[in-house]
Image (cartoon, rainbow, N blue to C red; front, side, top):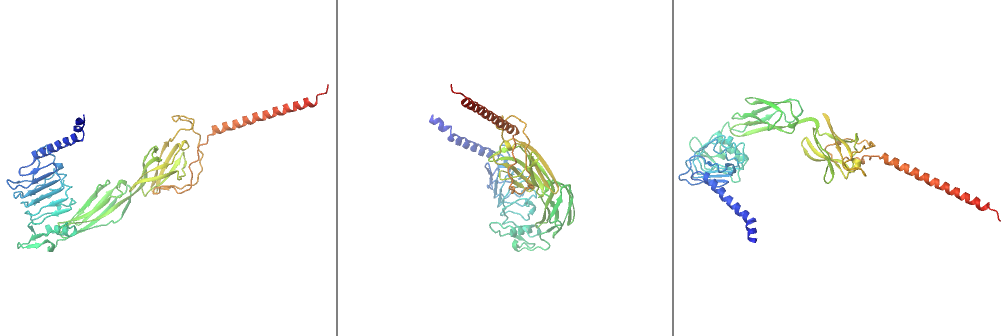
Length: 466
């Protein structure tokens, strides 16, 4: 029995895991190109004979290229180019190394789908030119280009700028060949009419009301003359742009409240690098209560709500039609704030049947207001089944003049108390009737006793002797 347990416990799980690992390596090996070795996450091509002519691809459907995180290629003199579609299947690729090989050119969109790339090493290849457009969408922590015969031109000045603004962990000693085939240190390279561009956006601070339209203007400058484009991110509102040489405009119509807080950028880009000027869009709009639900019980009872609005709206609660005066026992709490959206609850500490009723939330700012109402039931009345639906008498309130809560506050500072409870008029009348009956009985008994005492007195003193 112990043997069965041993082989059907953790040991068996490890055995199955080892078997699946072997199968995984075998399936990956079936798809591996000649002169390369492959695993579930790595491709290594270091055998110069016969070598590879094209970039390695996993040819079998049994291997998943999305799981490849590292590709290492060395001593492949016949590998000269990386085409646009060579790496598109390796979406999980993080490290790419091609060293001591014959790489001469890289297509502009070769890394378009490799957004996870962090390290690129092209040491000692045959690259004479390399554009920054290959890498501008990547967040690289390392780009090694030592030992390539770059031609001295404006096309590689971006490498010098990159070295100056974002140095690698180890400084690279880079050179280029001038027109006389003389090596010149890239750090000392000077190319006339070859510098970083600039962008200037006309609206540094932008606030607009929902539904309105705006136009932004941008001017760019630089030599070589830069291209101008707008980066609007995931802007929801309708927009269109017009560009003419170094001038550009962006028209945004029927602005949505969902775009409040989003960044809009004007970008100038040339061979050397890019510059951008940005503005944050602020949209003012009336409040909307997007969520209001019946109370839930946790540490305290909570009536959850979500309110959107900008500027931030003031909140006021009503209980059965009257202003709810907040206190330490019942107050508004804001738990999460997301720019123009506020998530919170009306918190009640140990509510009873006296707190059952209708709760209405009113949110208001200078652009308008919204209100929603829910019915809350915390517990049944004493002596009445919780599932029953008695006709509750009216609730009596006292208005203490409590001001509306700003949504930024978590508790009303007023010294208000809980709303006045429900007055049980039926039970009150019953108590009055009982007192009257008891008093009547006691009075009647007293009269009877006085009458009997009087009769007894007359009978004793009026009796004659025999």
